[in-house]
Image 1: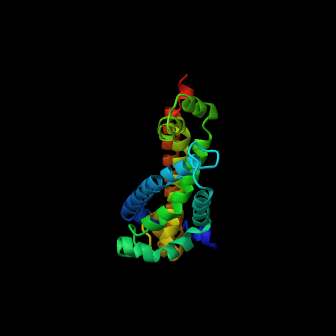
Image 2: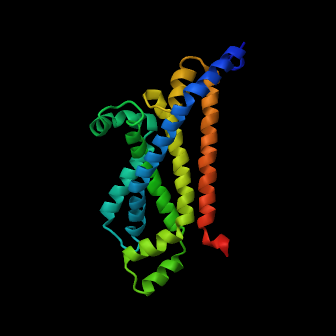
Length: 236
């Protein structure tokens, strides 16, 4: 009998049900807690960084020195190119300094934020570049400062796109939380990898995956609804 078939034997299903009742609720809370907090910090860092990438560009509303912009872009591209599991190991010293330990649910927030904020910065950059240039030119002709254009024109116009991209970010971070379970992070990822896979409890593994998929759908649906509600074009 193959592993997939053994996972659905009555005793294995009962074991998975016991996990669902007793261990999944707290693990689900840990996953949501880490995902939301990591997303918040990633947005707090990535949003102004994305604004800088757009406004400080050579053709932006407030061009900055090319050397500075090139350095920022290189750092963002470097952090985005490092696989998440390797990044967790790389930032262990920083995690210990900030949290006091490199394992556990709270400790996983540090590498999650470092992995996510460059991604968020690129998403913000993409959203802001989608804004109609004519709107920017109109604001400039009315004497608006670069800061006013960024905060009162670009950001408000890009809100629907930003919400959609932040939804993409939160679902991506949710996937990262599952990977962090492989090296000491908590939540559903820990149950799926440490208990489900490493201990050959495949029914538990499949159940954790199902819960993660449902969670992604919830975040995606909520983000899509908020994006549509904020899109003024759909209200005309």
